[in-house]
Length: 224
Image (cartoon, rainbow, N blue to C red; front, side, top):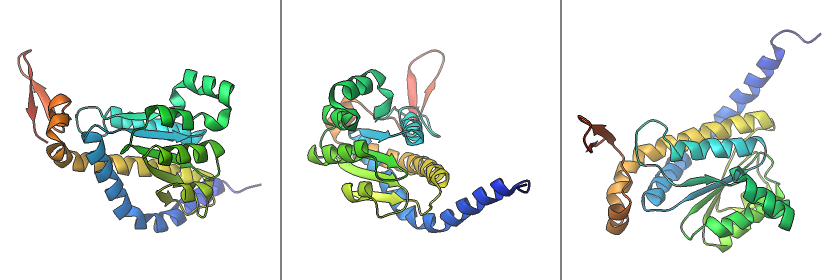
């Protein structure tokens, strides 16, 4: 009989082992967060895609951006491509599952937007097709994967690869990555709003502070 607690011990040991090399990504996480803050404040968009558990993580990330992580602010444009279920099923039916994300990337992506693709294996054909579509359309392509080398890492501009053979650990550190990207983004957002083009700022301002409503009147911006 397996000793009580051995599954937990094994899992935590694998997670602890992956945390050590993961720490080297701090500069990249800060840079990705700052770059997203700048691009989204200027009116750009983040497209995110994955399969299975990675799809759920993609939707978790976009929820933090359209909603908020810590600070009240204007919603930021972020789309989890798997969540458009009618489009996904129509594309899969008419074109095949390999194109379910690539076709949406071609529809929604604009030069300067960011496409983030999540895959523990780095081998999912629909994500590889999406990466190629993103690069052809002028998007910046980022990947979150398991260990490299893998095909998705090679297909994207940049990769954050979790050094673990345990799929669950890879997914758990992808979630940590999403939270840290959002934290760095919110830290950088006030400066990015200030630096945004005047036309963009005047037409659709991104509020990085807290809006306070006094006596039922109009909201007053309070800088964070």
